[in-house]
Image 1 (tube, rainbow, N blue to C red):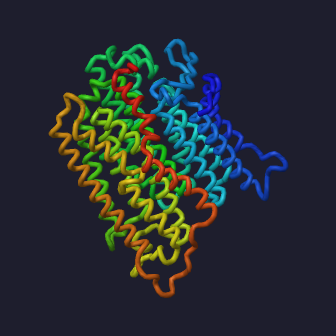
Image 2 (image 1 turned 180 degrees about the horizontal axis):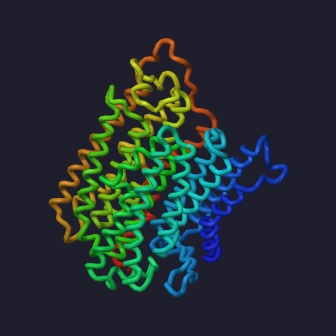
Image 3 (image 1 turned 180 degrees about the vertical axis):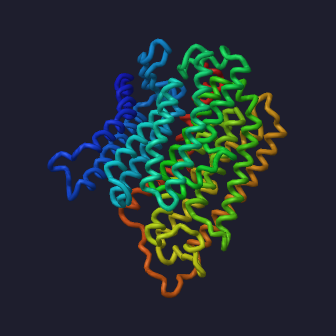
Length: 524
């Protein structure tokens, strides 16, 4: 790895977080003469590709300069006083936990911008679309980079408005109702979360996450920790999404445009689970320990519930929507993430972080593929896609069918692909949870999670059978196979899904030392 000095890393991280915001403002300005291309719409969409591409390069440079020999240390740190009276600071930094999420966010946003350049969104002004996309990126990147509780809340909230408008202005049927449900659920959760964050900061005497992790909850009474976990945990659980606080998600995914679904599943859901690991696990360990059995129970029920709903949606005559099915599958997959966190063990938490990244890659690819199917057929209804003899994607569009099958088997956790390791490690963590947690209870959760893996395999293989297999119906219209821009968009996700599956140490080598440090109360 290149030897990049700490001041340069600080600039890279600051530019990564602030760059999309500058790009969002620039997107609303008239294009300079000579850069308009064929039309102003094309110019602003190209602007989105350039800005998100530059941010991706910055995150890759940050990853290359990151000292991989000490991933538990907070690197590229910037710590500037912002509101001295409340000791609120502009504190940025990155470690082995946040670095993969920064790269994932930058990658998926760039791929969404690239996809939108070739498939412009239908709806309101492309200028507003690009500006909202970049604002969403800056809020998400900031969430994973800031190290102050108040800044975390502000960044957490920044993503809500752009995602609301992406759904409401560029979504499909019932988009306004879905966007309204999304904003109501997440805002209510955020209000409760803010109270919990303020409780932690005021009682501990600092809002600094690094100081709170080093303190390990010693300056907070058990009562304060329990109250904080209830308040902050509810807000994070809504965003995760944890059963039964998930009901906004299927509607939002079904109505959202393709890139909105990709970012919602691939990035925004990770903000909630990241908050559990970054804030509650190190700062309120006693409070989280008290609620870990309940968190594990909700996670296990969510795994089975999401799978059963998906089985209902995919059955013949079930009138299921493919986007809705993938949304419910996310409830199950994120249940594995929450189960890993609930074990409060290095194995379980590492599994949760690995599953976070794997879900972003695989589900992002699935939503891209479903968007392509809708572009070609005009529908995401599973019965309509399958028809009487099956959609027969293998025969009509073999590369598209093969990619859909690949994403499905990756999502069900096939060994050798990214989806396997996170879920396996989460279940290993449940087999031997942290000291003081009820092992019989977590063995039950392990059994439910194992049942969930079987149900997941069942519904995803049914999706492949109904949509990909079957004889080509006589007189079926031609179906375009994978286009050039689609191949460029999807190939990185396929490659990373395989890489993470065959070489899990790429991620675990980063996360494990940082997780060990958090669980040890900030001690190296």
